[in-house]
Length: 459
Image 1: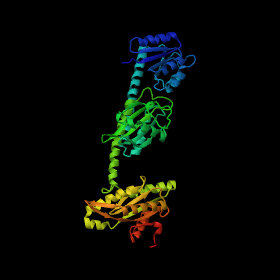
Image 2: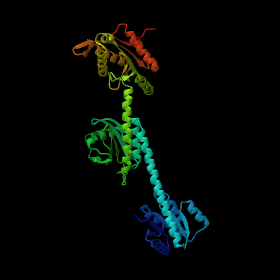
Image 3: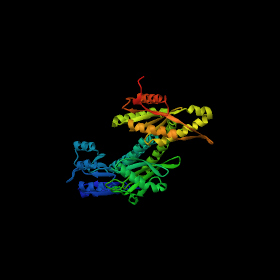
Image 4: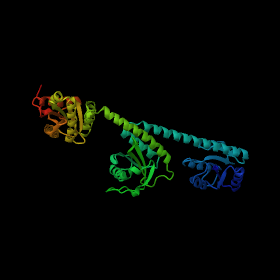
């Protein structure tokens, strides 16, 4: 067990020696001495002092000034004044400024030992309370991470929580991974998107070997065309779902130096494990949400998600002054396929149409099975001219495709497409849907054609 250390501060050698003898008598304490306030401050700055006994009046830094300066030091010792120049006012001021007790020279040795014991007991209790508070803080923070279902918010909160346990200005990022490929980067702090991407891709070949809470020499990473100053050490924590690594948390040392000497390894691992629970829950939630908003037959989004996506795109359009378009696609005479060959053949055609549509739009565009044999395409940042090009591409692809009905049976189909553009043709979600739908129905009069909301005849 480590003995408590007591620092005796007095400009009088006789009293320094006397107090040293009294306290060292039982062998319960380590006693050190200092002859001035300046010397005492230097010793306290090195750490390890539990109780400081000081005279009130000393040359240079007096006892009260010493007390005030000690209050600005982390983990400062308990302070007891022991002086022959006491007044009621000075005693009250010392206690107000944070002194633990006040003794008059010459003091009774047993009284001095009792005061020291009380100081050490109080210090031990405060340390235990601090530890409990710190554990409670970590537990509450961990609970927040484990309960997050929104993936973006979980990553942001996790990176912030990890960085708070480290030295100031610790840099951080995270990335989503699928089959060893980096899918998405989450910036924490201190790194721009380009730097985070460079580090993520440099780590990609090592992903399979990364253990939780691993420290990696960051200077060994080969970066391409990107400079990251003061790159020294990375702390890495993999996040898994269904037994596979699907994300990686990373902390990089601050610009102005290395990670702290007292590295909070256990704390970081605890938070990482709580984030892993949240990540697994978030992945399951995302999978469930995907099922709720997906069409079982084609794998496209369904009409429920169309309304959500349109509301989001309208907000984005208004914020950035963008246009986007919606196309309604109706298969011509699919009923004849169902009547002649059965609904299984019709379902096969619908799945093939879903695949065709994916090939006709960009990755940023969204596709929906609106219901029955109707499909919808949300074309982001696409004006009327662009929507016309995409609509014609879809119409032509369906017209030229030979659909398999099973075995050697095949068929040919056509589609009629109506489209409308926000905010040129409509100023609300429902108006946009109605106009695209009306344009499609107007085109049904001739079939295998495209029709713009701008071409609608007056009712």
